[in-house]
Length: 562
Image 1 (tube, one colour):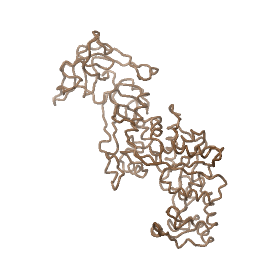
Image 2 (cartoon, rainbow, N blue to C red):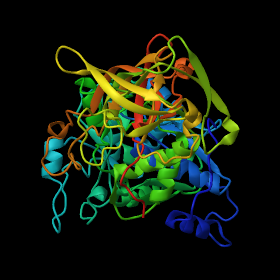
Image 3 (cartoon, rainbow, N blue to C red):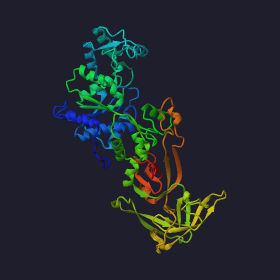
């Protein structure tokens, strides 16, 4: 695991069901709990998937069981090896592993075809010629059964047509294979659902070998059963599909136990969307810089922004597992990150909007060093050396020529302030350019206050401000991120989610000044910039020649967890 993670998973209703199943007399008594995580490789994993995979892998961890990783590659149109590799990387980054239990749904295509033929021979499936429009028109309604003129097609004729479908004789949409269940069922998923369709598309693994593909509701239960899955954990939208899941595993001759499907509520977070189709649209229309744009809810985007595996796993654990759908505040995800980084991130000084500070009574050409602790929460992280001289950089907002009420930073009014870890200073004035902009702040220092503590013990009424030494400071690009959407629910109603994009979701600051210790910052290293927030060296663009830091999360927030 990349970081020390807490594997403890709290009890929830899924675990209550499993406890019953593996107890004396339960349907899986004496068996190893076996789950699976089955993403479709048509995009990158996002924070919503993270809840599902932490439930799948976390449940296996809790019971000392197994969890398979399976690529649900039954729809070749948008699937690609790029997504397969990205999914594997994200899961490993979170600290989970599937061992040698990595599968593809396409591994079972031949077996699924055989089971479909078996259903036809049993009189439980038939080839249908209804177009999608006709299928919808004949689906019926509550109290009105569905109809199909092909339901009584002779078994031999369906077998012949199905074989010819596989052989590629027919164009897309010409035929489908439907399960023969109950046209009058109150559950519309059981009204003779389509289980195979024709799709002449290149598959990322199978090439052009197949031109018919199983539907998810047919493929998934077969895959689970063949892999020995005991508990098929899935999101709540599949609850109405559970009777079909059970019907499939009960009517094909799989020589294994029957898996149990259990549903849980999906994760909803405000100020974002989690439809892969919409996320792909953002990427393809260049609304963001890619799937790993730090504003995206993808795991690679969150990782690039500075999120840690532990913060995300803690978030998923603390929101719990429930049956009822609810929306979680994005601020809580940020809270979990801030909580983690407060304990682990090294403290450094960085000036985002610099203005020069000249200490007029400090000797020219002289410099000195201070030892500064790296993290007050972790004494074992030691200290680092920072340099100090006559010329420094401070934040432009730390000086006002005409102070406002309660302003406690540098002003030409004699208020004494503390330079973090260095000396006490008193502002004496400023220098402006021809446009009236402040380009230099002037101050004097108290030589007897090294370390920020006056020799006479007087009380310092001004604020403590951070700084960097002008002689050793490094230039850096700073990227300040905000929510990608300005609307808390961009998916609601008939909104166009693109109209809800936040035009101020990214602010780029050039010419920031950071302390010299950051010269060795590695990609994805995380820091607390004192008084500014938590930042991460950008994993794509940062280099020793051009330092780039992304703000992962602000230093403080009003969010209070319940």
